[in-house]
Image (tube, rainbow, N blue to C red; front, side, top):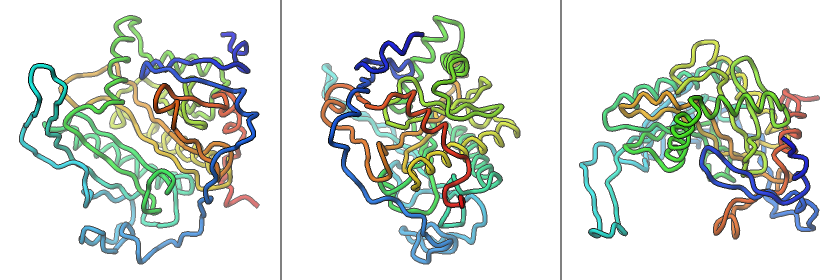
Amino acid sequence: MELNKLQSKSHRRYNPLTRDWILVSPNRTDRPWQGQTEKPAQLSSPAYDPGCYLCPGNLRAGGMRNPQYSSAYVFDNDFAALQPDLPSLTVEDGSKNLLIANAESGICRVLCFSPRHDLTLAQMALDEISAVIDVWAEQYRSLGDLASINHVQIFENRGAMMGCSNSHPHGQIWATQTIPNEPRKEQASLEDYWREHRSCLLCDYSALELASGERVVCQNDFFLAVVPFWATWPFETLLLSKRHLTDIDTLDASERAALADILKRLTTRYDNLFQTSFPYSMGFHQRPTDVGEHSEWHFHGHFFPPLLRSATVRKFMVGFELLASPQRDISPELAAERLREMPEQHYSLQI
């Protein structure tokens, strides 16, 4: 693929998972304005914060008290965005279908990654991350087994820049009655690709990235992290299982250990890039939990970090991005190279 012909020119790239296009404008890196600056995140949190509603033994905002947990701890969100067991209800305007609303029931849970208030995935030990993965798998299985649940979304918002109001290491799990927009787009693409090629879209894509190597950030025996060819965010990454499997619950013991390894290595690279606690939204996309087998699904994770040029300069999705299509300045190949060059020891430990 002669991509070098376009590397210095504005061009579009296609995202086969969502069937959207992204505008790449490498020439814009020479412009004088370098973006809004923010205060850099600090690594000065205490191991225990008596005012934190997620620390062990503390009173939560909803009035419940946390147990003295010593590992990953999950509980129902005190201020859930979804309500369980709602009756079926549809409101619509009639035959033209311009105004439609459906009741949407579901379950929202919070997962504290660690009892320590001052840690992130990048700073946790591998066995501690493995404990988080075990809870993710158990929650995917138990929530997905409910007749009213057809999709389980595991995600983490890291840092105040991504709207996280509490720095205690935690993520969320939202289980919904219907398949949300982004997974539904991927569902259609994966199904259509399978019908046309009789192979998995992400298996074939992984093979291309491994053969090229130019967008690979890191890998181990079971997982691959790349800046995807169609990346929207400056240092966006895509985490792919090398074996074709549909969901996190089908990972064997070796694969769960490998997932912990690559999560730590990738998030450490993020922190080392600008020597800050790197903000991001991340989440896993996997097989819907409806009655279908969904063998076309390939377990994968998305990392969407907003930082652009430093710990204090972020990317905004405004103007053309909101009204037309996403746009990026630095190429995915350059972003992958910069992440790949980062050391795997966290900067806070480097002498």
